[in-house]
Length: 437
Picture 1: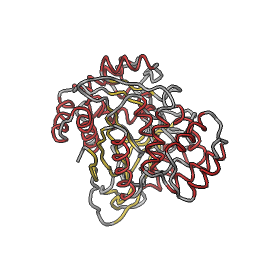
Picture 2: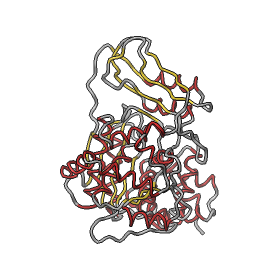
Picture 3: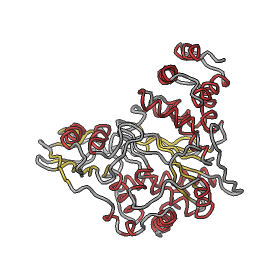
Picture 4: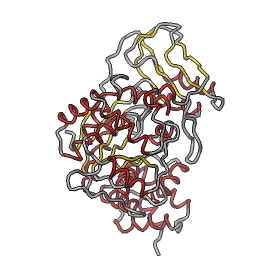
């Protein structure tokens, strides 16, 4: 019988564990043989001390192999997906995925839900009336094979040990840590059938890696561990001390993504989405990044990507009328403006604080299992480098009857820093890594 406490002590002291010990720990949690307090202590030790590459690979395999493994055998292209590691807004993937699907990439998309100040792709799709994210695995497989793309949430069949461990992490303050985050990400994507992966590592106040050196460490690990497990990895470190796009919230972000696919929308969101789409073509088809970007731009210009999104939405029961008329998406009826009390240039936006404002509006969940409100959100009128006049609105909160409005206003007001000096506009793509270099 495994001495669970011995594993905790050794991990606390920074020792490396054998792959079999890591696997045994995961199996013990899945079978509920490991007491919750010991599991929590181990995960905290792993967050504080990290896991080495062999431990991370073993952890990933254990999570991935704990349930059913889907495979999409395609002699031409590797099935692929996008993985975002945190950050306010995540609607670039809504744009990138249908672009890649236009060119024959198979996209088995396992999407997350929002948690605290990190958005979830699944919630954004569910903002579309009647869109089904609860399709069964056979429907999922048929959709990927049929139209090239399907979107689903995690089921009890896919990496169940990962779901259980992630629940423990969410409840015990151990959601941080590069190694555990990476293992969780790779396990879920691998179990659902993706073999190519484009990873956006968000760096800054709204990202999982707040400092660039931490983002670089994560990029190095996701490439080395991912490739050792048989994934093709391409990725980008993006700057998230500035919100991506101009909105936060499920319906608002879905509308903004639709606008980009219609040839409109904010330029910064378009740029990141084009890079992600190009990365998908790189890992699936071996296209060069530059050629991939050209193809992505053409898919938007020709409306092919927009029509592919329509096909996806229709195939999963969603109302395609809202794609042609995105103002029909559900909206909160309340409006509260955040007014600047002085003149100056926006030098910094704490996107974590904006995320907290969104959480107080009811747009995200404090813990897994809670409901969210697709109708609420934040419209950001001023970004880093923009001039703000005294009395001018810098953001508008879109509220509902469930919103904690005053708490949301306070968090939003704290997010913006003004200065007399105009800063340089931030660079969006800080670094490329893996096969995107």
